[in-house]
Length: 408
Image 1 (cartoon, rainbow, N blue to C red):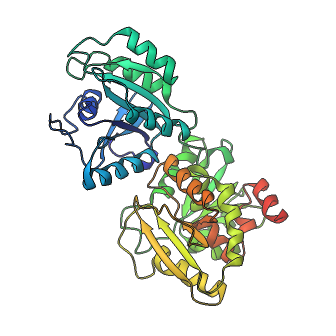
Image 2 (tube, helix red, strand yellow; image 1 turned 60 degrees about the vertical axis):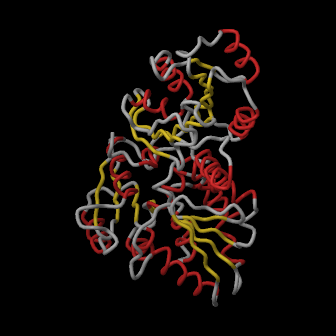
Image 3 (cartoon, rainbow, N blue to C red; image 1 turned 90 degrees about the horizontal axis):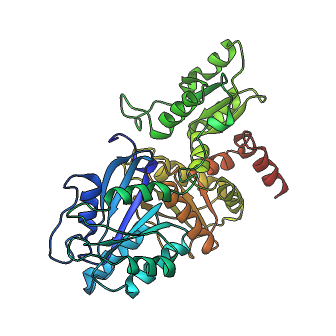
């Protein structure tokens, strides 16, 4: 449960006014003191993440947030942090003190959640203080068209019912398409090219590589893992050709040269773009690379924070390749972790990492923000394949995308 990456968990956001019982609800759901509880309004400041497992959903991430009615300068900053949580929420629980009236705070938040098509449950808390009438529940259900439940985080009344409703509210395909599994049949071989360099700590592979290996095994395929120098030898000695070769994007040129044309080829980053986001949008964004001119502003977004290496892919290699492609200097800006600008109009291109550390909902939100600002967006794998002149080959597992870029 604890080892499942945050980006692969269903994200459940807990929202509501101060002192509605959000933190108490998390403790009731997790059956432990996961969140700090106090009668003082505004105890929760920054979002608090708690990993747990809810069967049959599996590993989930529950997020406690600051009150949507917070006040003052700091309060406004906390509300902004709460709004950031909405962008990554798969299922929202809106907690309300059952003894209080439904207010604009709840109405505005529900409107925002509906606009984003986020499954929402309204929880009327503090049933232990004074019984909440069934009539109130019926009225809110009829008005809001969402599930409405009454609970007590003290007596735990209604908590199991809430878990049942959570399970029903999980959206279909919230975790995206399989990484590799739908591209192969049982018994197919998949060769994965995994360079071992200073960016790969001893004893570990990067997350997309591990996930791809597991997905191939889950779909009864054969996973063969080699370093880039061993690929040609492996392919020459296999009795049957593999169905697919997957490479680290930085080794695209060498791997493409060593892989026979009849074998499909792609990269971990491109597969991650399809799994976590919208591959078609990212591929179409690649055409903007040909329109870049000297002095244009380019945003490079990394969903994780890591120590930069001397030849870091996002900070060094991609900027160098783009300068060479454009034939001049470009103005690069970087963001990392949860940061993603709201105002993107000054950029001519957004380049995003594979997104393995954020969930699908967050990645789709970032793509949507780029589209709203009419700024093209690509990810590392798509960009590198384009710059190396092998994008059609890198999309060989996806013939409809090959046709799309040929038409363009």
